[in-house]
Length: 138
Image (cartoon, rainbow, N blue to C red; front, side):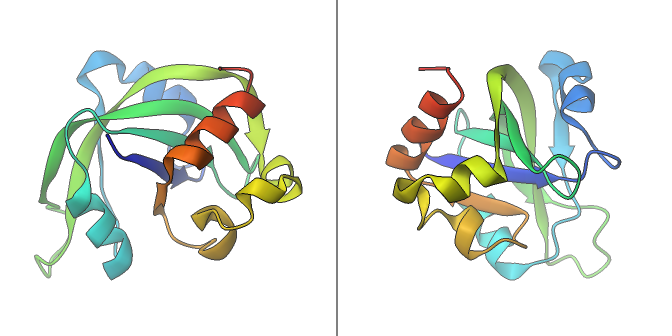
């Protein structure tokens, strides 16, 4: 299983919105970056990801799961971009802030540090375990 990080501005789509979507989940659309598109294409059913509030909060707040693999994004008039469907799995016991991630030397190479504007990012198994530990989830 691969791990990911999904970034969303809470005023557009918050963790609470994701929780409210329930087991049916929702689509993760609107990605217009080719590197992020490649990440979406690499996602498989059951892959897990962190849900990150960007701009407001700047913190990892929950875990989501891919429930539908990449398919065409109908909001893209060019037809080049895709989306996946995700559902909320659980809230983290303690959100992990961007400041927390920056303060953890073992996360210095995390995509969140190197590609701060990328809306969908890979997370290594080691990074996944470290963040879960920081959140009190493991």
